[in-house]
Image (cartoon, protein in one colour):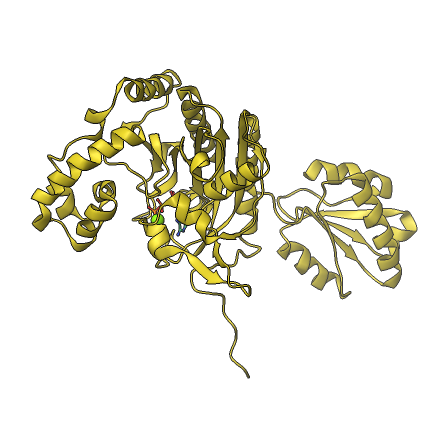
Length: 424
Ligand code: ATP
Ligand code: MG
C-alpha cells in the first residue's frame, strides 16, 4: 500500500464534528459586524509580496520570518496573505472606495504564517477582521473596541478576557521617542539578548515587546513614549479612554504594547486571556492613519482589528461555553421496503419545500427497522419518521422521539411539516 498523504504541518482540517461550532462563531461575528454598519469584503488569498513588505514593515517578525513567499510561473514574487488589513487597503484603494468616503468593512478567512505550530498557533489560521476608513476622531476607536467587547459577551467569554490599551502617538512623536530609546538601549546593550540587540538597530520599539524577562528588567527605567506626545495625541487617547469609561468597558493601560506590525499610530489594543497558555492574545488592532497613503492612496485615516478564530474557539470549548449548536440532523426518515422508498422520497421533497430550514435526512441503503433506527439514533436527530407498508395504507407516518420519554405517535402526511418546523 502506498503511503497515506498528510496535510501540511500546521494546516488543519476542520472536520464535520467541529464545523457546527465554527458556524456558530461565524454567525455571531457576521451579525455583530452588521449590527454596527460594517459590510463584508472578500479579497484574494494571494497578493504581491511588495504589499506586505510595504505595509507590515520589512523588519517585523511576519515579513522577516513568517511569510509564505514564492515566485509564480511568470517570476513574480507572490505571498500567501499573513493578515488582512493590507489586503483590504489594497482592494479599497484599487476600486476607489476611499476617496472622500467613509467605509466600514469586515472580512473573514484563512491567513498563512510559517510559525512553529503549537496550541493556538498554526501555519494556516483564520481571522475575522474589521476596518473603518475615513474617520480620524476617537469615537470610532471606542466604537470598534465596544464592538469587540460585545463579541465576547455574546460568545460568553467576557469574564475571561482583558483589554490592554496604549497609544503610539504620531509618527513624528514616535521618531523622537525612538531616538531617546536607542540612546537608553545602547547604554544597556550588554543586558539585551541577541534579538533585542538586532531590533535596537532595525526597529527599536519592538524591543519593548520582548518576552525575555531579562530584557524586560533592563527596560524598567526606559523613557516612556507618552512623554513625547503633543496635545493632539494626548487628547485623542484621553477621548478614547473617556468613551470606554462611559461605555463601562474596563481596560488596562499597557505602555509596552507596541504591536508587531509597523503601520499603527495612536490607539492600539489587544484582548488577552490567561486561559490559552502562551498564545494569550485573541484579538488585536488599532489606528493606522498613514497606511492608505503609504500604499499609494490619498491620505485616509483607518482603524481596525483582527481576531484569531481558532483561539476564540479553543477558549469557547475549553471554558464549556458552547451553546446554540444545532445538531446536523433534526429528523431522520426511515423507509421500509421499495414502495415506501419511492413514496418516502416524494414526501421528503415536499416537506423540504415547505419547511425550508429543516434538516431532514432520508435513510439510504435499505435494511431492517433495527438497522435504520440505529442510524437514526447516531445521526443526532430528535425524531425518527417511519414509513412502512401499514403507514402507506393509512396515509400516515409513525413518529418516534429519540431523545426523552415522549410516546410515539401517528401523524397524517400533511401534519408532518408543522412537526418539522417545531424542531428548528
Ligand atoms: P502573536 O503575538 O500571538 O504571535 P500577533 O501579534 O502575531 O499574535 P496579529 O498579527 O495581531 O497577531 O493577529 C491578530 C490575531 O490573529 C492574534 O491575536 C491571534 O488571535 C491570531 N493569530 C495570529 N497568528 C496566529 C497563528 N499563527 N495561529 C493562530 N492564530 C493566530
Ligand atoms: Mg505573531
